[in-house]
Amino acid sequence: MRINQSEDKYIRAKERITELRKFYAKVLRGLVAVCIVAAINYYLNEWEEPWFLWVVFGVTVGILVRAFRIFNLNPFFGKDWEERKIKELVNRNEF
Image 1 (cartoon, rainbow, N blue to C red):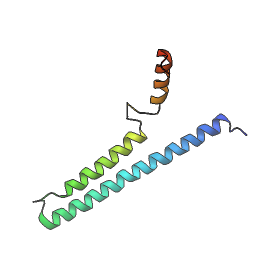
Image 2: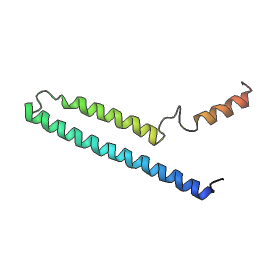
Image 3: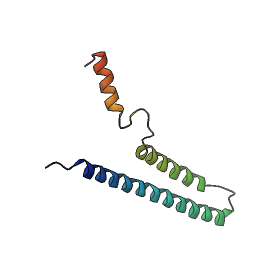
Image 4: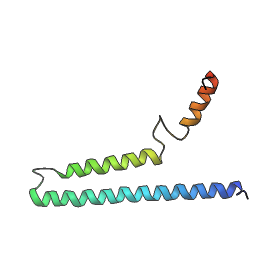
């Protein structure tokens, strides 16, 4: 039994919204974690040794990796990379 096209689009849209909601929740949790760690760092040594920046770095890298995946920001191996490469090889008869 084939799902009709509108139901298929609805399901994909719902999955996309779920991914976006999880991403924004991760960003919010990251900001809260950075604020808490920064406050602890300030309380312990008034930022004489700003070790909380390592947490900022880690959270930022994690968020960027997830953003690249969710928003298709990878120009080399994005969703349509495989299809483009197939067309390129077929056009050059290299298969």
